[in-house]
Image (cartoon, rainbow, N blue to C red; front, side, top):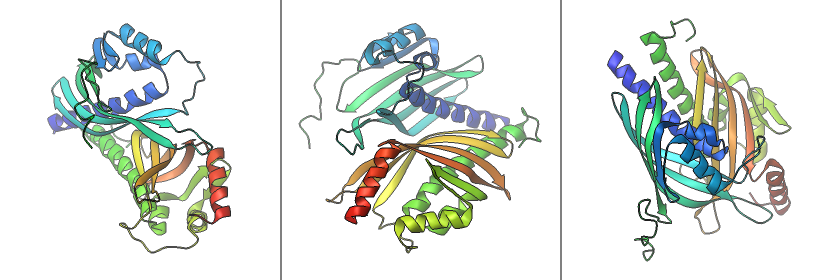
Length: 326
């Protein structure tokens, strides 16, 4: 059991490191980003190859530019997905995919993907903490060989608090709680996509609250009324005929007994006039959660639209209501 638990904990910590990598890069926290690597860690990608924390930090400053301490990124973000982690004692390997999104131009900006690729990583545990020993970023669409930037694109011409904190039981409970909360956050979006109002409300605690700017709704009746006002009626549940869906990524969960906090990013895609998926909104969820009757529930969710901003999104909704478009 101890061996199995250590492997689970190691994989969970490596997965969290993958999320921290993207979040720190988006926040332009160059020093914290470089500290994710070992002292002689190596980053290789389209900008070259850099070894050591100082060189990696300087690489970001040179290519992205310095930022102020109060910087908030509302222009672009990295999305990481499909992580596959293999732990072998004090080392690990991982493969994951990434998308780089930017804000489109115009009066009604939307999130636009501009770069797709994959990461191949070597990790090592140093003084009890997992660090990146080597990361290779492979830009696939558009293509750039990290080892030969001038190489042609081969696809260019193709179309619980009572447990002892270090006990096996406490550590196992922590991992179970983190994964249960991640499933809950994904279930939240699944209920929205299915227009399952009752199921969506049930994701919240009995006095759960949803907040977006000055819009605050608490308790089952207010939450149910919120969706009915948005959709006009309580629709039939249909998983396969929806016109929109949410992508949830970058989930970070911190558990403290029967309470927890979580942060995640979300991207809303809808069908365009040709039936293709079209990204229309990207934002951040900031959550407080509690264990209620043995089940994790959302106690307080703050929804921060980022691209477009809340003000820009309100203008879009107002125009849609005026033009009677969904």
